Length: 246
Image 1 (cartoon, helix red, strand yellow):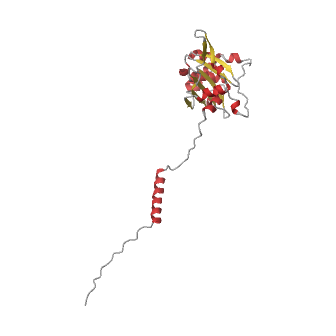
Image 2 (cartoon, helix red, strand yellow):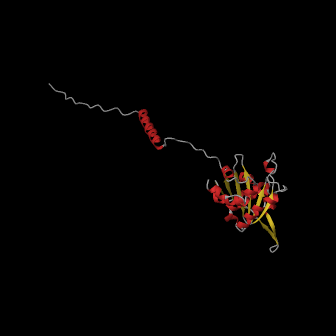
Image 3 (spheres, rainbow, N blue to C red):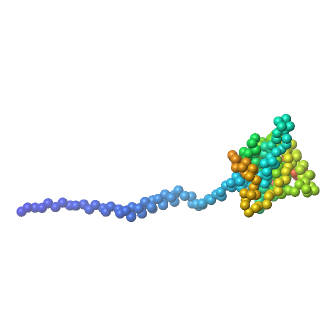
């Protein structure tokens, strides 16, 4: 009688299916994602940066013509001397303002356009005047290193030079100009009326110069020390020690 040997066969575990394997991977990835995120996850969206043309329009450069950049006649070289910088400002609906400094190269092309935001609380806490001439004083002090020994055109857009107290309002600006040693002139260039075709309302020569701008910079607020210095010029009776104690 022949005996048939019997061998025990060990049962192998079933291989995981593709669906269960995918589920495990997704669960591990979700766990890793939760560990990498902070407890309060917020999505921050940034506003697009205004174009150089939009910024130039806001500060009044596109309301000018290239001839406005002529400072005086250079008799020695039988030519013209141009402004190195144009200083201007703009007020906003939320009570804040912005001071702009446009710097031009030897060919009167826009080289750089810098701006400094003036928060509304500065006007409130320091009781700083909300006028273009007062902001021009502040602008000369903010950018003193840039405008030192330069020719600067202070651009006014909303201030009417025919007002009775206009000449008296120029005195603080003269003091600021002497302080930082700049040759300055003040020019009133009211905003031009908008036309249906925006290209027709913008001077082509100035637009071309603006498009050649190389650098831009923005500061969120001026140093308080500079604000106090400007306040003392526009209001000689002001006591700076009162604000320093606040």
